[in-house]
Length: 638
Image (cartoon, rainbow, N blue to C red):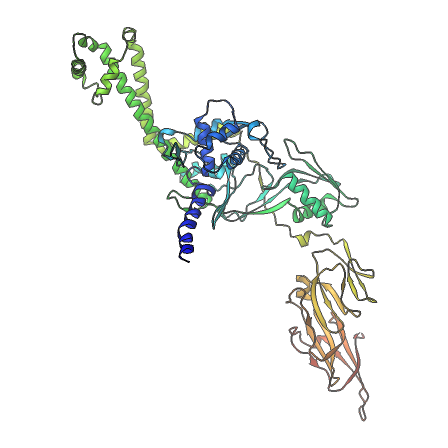
């Protein structure tokens, strides 16, 4: 037992932590899972502007990823099909049809301009050793765009899962700008397959979204599907429609798939069926409509999994953009100051002929000292201390460069550096405005590339029961006692397989069941009707029965409101026989009694409406102390 406890307390917890942090859940900073980050880092390392074989990219990525080539290849294809950071060439599959990509050796990829521009800066990136210690990989990429919400993410870890839907790239940038201006702009999902979406219950990224295919029903005899709900493919849509047709949920004469670069599924309807009548059935019984539960689980900046709202993620991304831009500005400022310092020393060194003072020196130390002494009169022009490294750099300047030194050009270069430094200082002082301008520049550049695809509308989810067509005939054969839509007998109702019916036998026993194909109920069935809200709210059952021991008549009024499917119940008490049953409360009860000596009244009439409606388990009211001969319900004479 100690071994088992140790196994769970150490090995299993370590495994769970590893799967959560290193495989399945994306990081909030760059919105990437580790395998995606390693692929993009590899593409940046080998980037030369040309396409690379995917097999080659996968091989290079294996230096960082310890789980084999199959997972890298699958993640790369998925990244490429999101059309944001990976430019693809060749057959990468089809997100509309569900067709798979070609083998890695046949397809090529490279970084997109957006990826190069917004994801990488090795000089401000934190690195850590790879799994084998031979290389270094980034902890997170310095992403200046909201990758997580733009691409979406889905993953299952130990005891937790994430599902983040993709959003419109431009709308996300606009939301970040709004956040930086202390405003709020809500964003909603936008899917690459377009379609329709109801985001009423989105709950800022932790609720649900109803998605639908976009149906063209202009032609009354055919329906065209031009846009798909997220998560569905033309193959899954067609399969679900064919399955529904086989189960008689909808009637079609044929279905064809003409999808290429755009989705186009043609559904031809059966004779006598029109497109408007079939629309709800497609949404109810096929993959043309589905509900997506969303859960924004991610790895937070503290390295722990956390659930955040979309607004919180946008706020974090906006602040992250500001911090990355600040780091880049400070990095460039430092590099420009170094360059200005070197240019200043070079100008003084050449203009004032300090190099002439070393001609007579015999030793290396004397040469270095002569250069230091030569800069002494110009301390006010030099912004920082002159180092031995600076001197060594100056001494390596060739004579040809000294003789060809252009003072005016050097001054212009230094003026350009000073001008850029002034701009950087201004950006650092107005960092938020600089970040907003950067995001606005991205919007202007990529607005046409990323238009909104999914139309946001409000619609009610179609229930299967409401959409089902009642195209079956429920029949009852009183001679055999069988009930169902495959029975030969009198037609009772038009039904669908989603209807439920209440059956009351001649014994007073009753039960609720789904519409049967063929079921033995009773040769003397008293009642058969639909069970729905209207029935349970309005139908009153009026039962006249007698006690088997005394023969006395009883009358009971009740509603059948609660039941368990296919469980038997009794409308009347034990040791009683039901005489008549009706749902019409505007009748009279007529009773005939058995003759007895000295008894003159042999029949009576009672008004049904004079009696109260009670619970189904309650006993009936005794109408008389005499033995009943027969009873019936009659209309009141006017």
